[in-house]
Length: 340
Image (cartoon, rainbow, N blue to C red; front, side, top):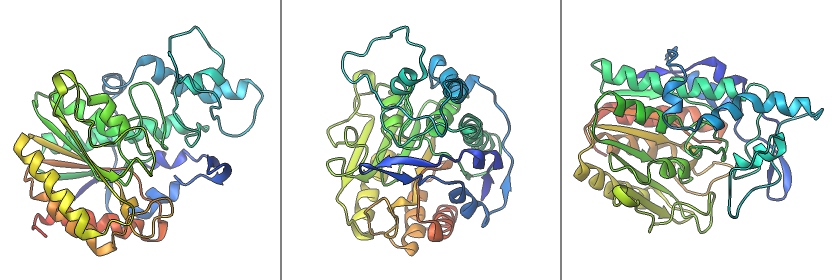
């Protein structure tokens, strides 16, 4: 499989997050990408510039991401930049320029710090996804894999969260639309709901977003990902959420995925983009499904039955010892194209 990865994505390295009421080591570490890249032959991404990012994210937010670390340093504080105040009611655009206020304006949690090289890594994560999509559309390839890090599916148009800063899948989907494709499908198989991707396309009739994830009644991001969220306005009916209970094993997951694939097939996308998270693994330290390593190849084969050009984009997965093998098994399943 054609794989795209840039080592500059490793330079984002926050030290800690606020988790369960205490400081914890940050779970989204550079070793995640290294564990996967070490098993694959990777190609460098190309630089598509800011225009594809601006097609998804607001200019104010992109400028904030570029400036936040320097502004944090200018206050004389050490360590990563984290918010502590959030405008949760009657949000309005106030002329606030203090970095503390800006962090809260553009965040929804305290698990997504900005460190010295966050912007550069997030930028090249987005460029990695753009290159994978461009290589898919311009070549004779049926599949490509964007090894993106930091992940992206929790980031919205003007906010970060869930370890995500730029929504690489959304950026890739909009780039595909700009080439003339009319119908783009997004399938999110990360343990956590891709709330940012849903938010970006919730009223868009040209992008079908489908997600299988932990029930937000028990798991992050809580406020999004419920089954009754089906799209709005012109996008009504193009959003599909399938929440599953903690402890879900392959048989239950396969049933859900088969149903989602059937729905996507009925919509007839010209291109599929998969937000792949290996945090559905039984040994993942922050997730609670019960999928085994051998299940990932079955998952990939089932995804391949949709039989459309497919770009795979890395999202979560935090069991470092098994992450590389689980991801490689999924890629092999997609590439084989043989139904499970």
